[in-house]
Image 1 (cartoon, helix red, strand yellow):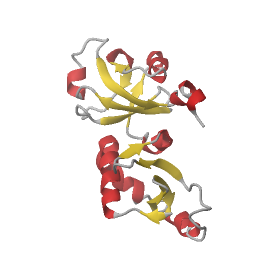
Image 2 (cartoon, one colour):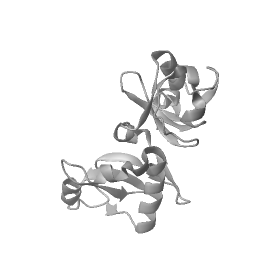
Image 3 (tube, helix red, strand yellow):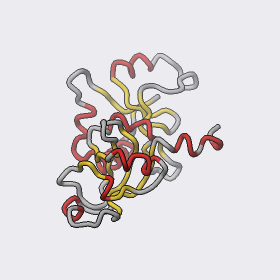
Amino acid sequence: MRELTESETRVLFEKLSKYIGRNITDLIDRPDEPFCFRLQKDRVYYVSEKLAKLASNVSRDNLLSLGVCMGKFTKSGKFNLHITALDILAQYALWLKPSGEMSYLYGNHVLKAHIQKMSEDCPQHQGVIICSANDQPMGFAVSARAAVECKTLEPTAIVGYHQADLGEYLRGEETLA
């Protein structure tokens, strides 16, 4: 497990900023204790600095994971968020009505009729976290329209493009190793 290089950090922060904007600093400079990002076998982990120092005593071959897996770097150098990062990023979310939750978990896009609440300043093509009506994070999406446009849309218009959801584990169960 090692610290991220400057270019890896830049790519990670660019991806996170698509979902949580300037709130990235809140992830690192937490009031309870400082946290950091560490890399292990192309996967980025979000872990407290105290735990990261303790883990430095374990050899890289014997360490499988540490903290919360935020995602992984592809061979081309891009960063893909994993569904395990959802709980951390969920405080910046779009909430669905109970009627739209199952549709989203089956892999469908988010329709205007399914939205319970949405932040007023959400621009078009912004990454969003999808939450249920009772604040359970369910997945990631990309906003299809700006929040200002959504007020005048018809109920069947797509507001968010599906990216990943908790239902993927069930739908792809036979392909999991």
